[in-house]
Image 1 (tube, rainbow, N blue to C red):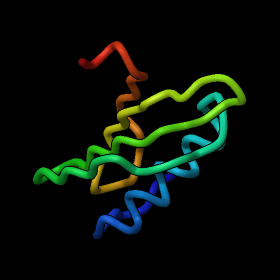
Image 2 (image 1 turned 45 degrees about the horizontal axis):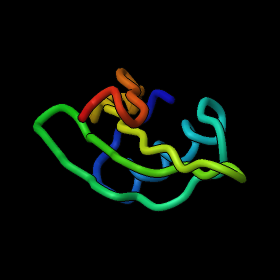
Image 3 (image 1 turned 180 degrees about the vertical axis):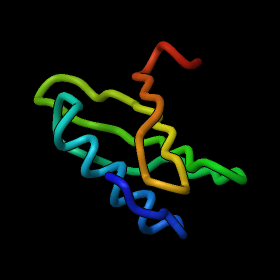
Image 4 (image 1 turned 90 degrees about the vertical axis):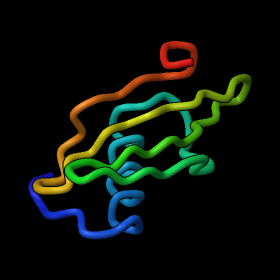
Length: 76
């Protein structure tokens, strides 16, 4: 991705782009956004015809790379 992530809006857009290419289902609701000094943590849902999945991604602020991705059940 290689771009700075200065605010929540940009972080959510990067999470959507990541979900479109890497996650099963259609992007749904953003359920939580958390900012640290160096990262954004975005939690969101994806939906298939029969299931809903919750995802958590960590995105670096400095270059906008997704450095971690967990799907529901693995981070509770």
